[in-house]
Image (cartoon, rainbow, N blue to C red):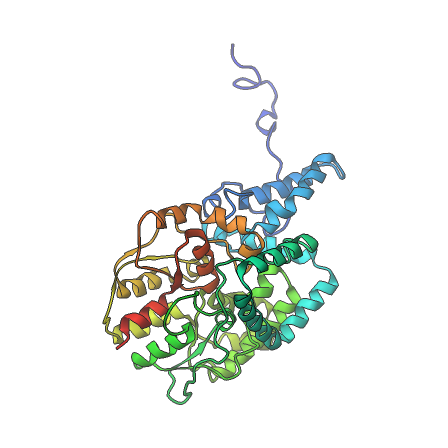
Length: 433
């Protein structure tokens, strides 16, 4: 009647009985109290696991006896359910009360998978990235002529033969190649250094999109506002290092992180000019993510740099000096996860409002989980992550679909069947004489 051992209990240690154990796992995850605040932000929430579940599963592995059937099954499932399907966007860190970055933890696990040979190959790719970049642009151009059906069959076969997490799947939404040459610019007149991200040096505009390429648009609209920019002649072969960082290739990450900082310091005359980057994930990479991987000397150089996302450059420097000559009726925007980390989602909206009478930010806008090439490795991740946002976008027509990261735009193209482009392309068109 009095609920023995529940309401009334003679055991003096009753308050300690039945407590859940919290075994120490990785230092990054140990502070987790399993509150679940991270779960709504996670792109894989509806597909596999959430950040909380990734940590809970690690703890359960530690609770199990070595070699137990439960431990074995957990280990077998963890690779795909936790590591492979993590977008690595780290928006979980923004939602976590104690700032746990489960995305960074999954990248550490990816690194732990790599053999010494794979690390050496990744580092070699970074050292010779100029040739890799050129080859990638040629391959994309050739692929554009070969047709989607053949390429889907070829990559599908390769994925089965090698490993789905290593070989990307060809998607029809992948655009053609970018122009081989970047726009000509004049250094003495420039008020900023413009760094076209490697993704925008490899991939061009979506098929059938008229008008200039993104680098041409940024150069044109900056000059139009009286704030000319300069593109260094030796940008080929440099990168923000996110390619290696997101996959957990530490040696390649260190090579490229130090290369881009040394180059940027020289381009900007020791930090006297700002460095404007035209892809939000690359801005985040150069501004923040490269820092732990720099030498002591290069960390000092990095501290002198001013790295600006192209949205911030446009909103703060260009809009006050431009006139909107033509505006579309409506635009929907996709704020990327990198924008959330950088805190410049408002600048995306500001640029869009300059170009359109009505601007909509979807209520369910979140990380698209395309994550560089992860959406090509695991298309089901992007499909799941974008489902709610895509339903909202496709519920009505829009005249423009805007973002500021080429790979995220490809992911949203695939999710919605609509054509997403950089807000800077829309700005150039809106202000064109």
